[in-house]
Length: 523
Image (cartoon, rainbow, N blue to C red; front, top):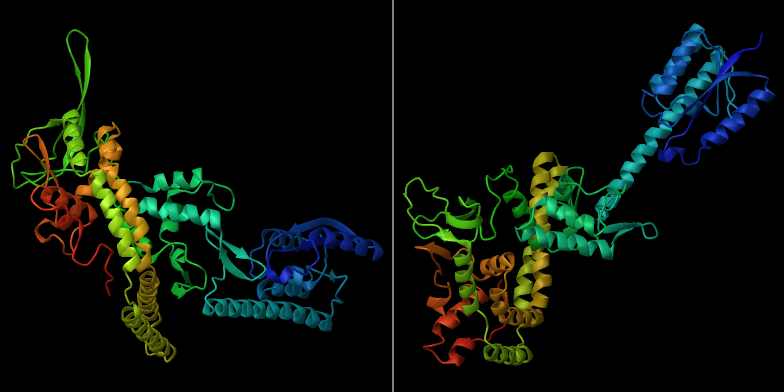
């Protein structure tokens, strides 16, 4: 009576299985082998799982059926197809000992059910396990070496690609621009994570499987230090050799915004109106909010109104400020914006001065850069001492990771400042020219009916200095007004102050600061 066999074929995606025959090739070879040896195959078991750890479902089912006595032997390509761990290998040897298995057949390996044969089989299982363990350790060692070299040892995030030729990570130009814009949009504070996710989707950014980027995934992208040239690996922050696609300043602003907007969302009772969050109450200091109202007359006419009023949330002050209609509020805001528009003759004079100042300015950056380099050198020494303390077991692992992360972030900021200094002298002219053009468009924005555009420019010009009192919107004095010509405020504060002083001072004293109009370098 011929013995009955189960055929077992296995191949996983593990690195050690790269050179192993495919499952189809194994089955073809094993069928031919069984035919030549006149072995009867009762059933074929195919599995695509690693054998490094116990728990393969198909292998487990096969062993249970062998225990019931359905067959007395197994045909497989090699012992390592059956087991690469001590538990599964031990079970096979045990079944041979107690008679559940009478024979194992391998085209590439000799085996007989004798003490010598079982010893040889056990050694084959041990050798497979040793190979796996050694390969795993060598792989981990290689990954640690890549990390030391500043190379992220995994799949590159969106905006980068893994270059298989150079074994490095390089910037993917098209997607990196979208990621940079996503950071810039989010830091402005007027967009939610859902809005950024929609922006990414519209620009063709999706997961590797082609799915839409979720809100949670969007938050992960905005919090990933990879985009500033760093990366996390094994719960530790490392310096990378890949090219950053955003500045650390922009990244820090995104982290602040994530923290600020990380509060639980509450559904408002009324839809927020265009000018909400822009103006404060002059009496109690609370914000002015908008409320939509519908009034129905007895004759059937329906009127829609939007009113703005104090939120009255100050418990210590009983605010009696009246509400104001949106149309009147819009008219007053438009008037304030128009008054800050840059006159054409001012713009022409400013541009002439800027061109002249740009051509004549030549400031030395040596001392400033040297100071930053000395700080970087000091931080590098601290990192080295910290590592030595960790290796000497004087510092706990968790403390080492935290302190190392802090030092690396400080070092990254200083390196970015040095890079920025080298551009500051020459990179201010174009932004200044753009601002002059923008300031000349304020009159057009004020006359349009785009409430959102007005809110954006009003926030930029007046900041949090708009107040409502007795149905009148006014702006508090610009910061630079009392110290005109000195550092303080911003370009919009300077322009507002210039308008206020234009009637009492000559134009030259308003437009020309004592040291020119280029930005100063700060240490």
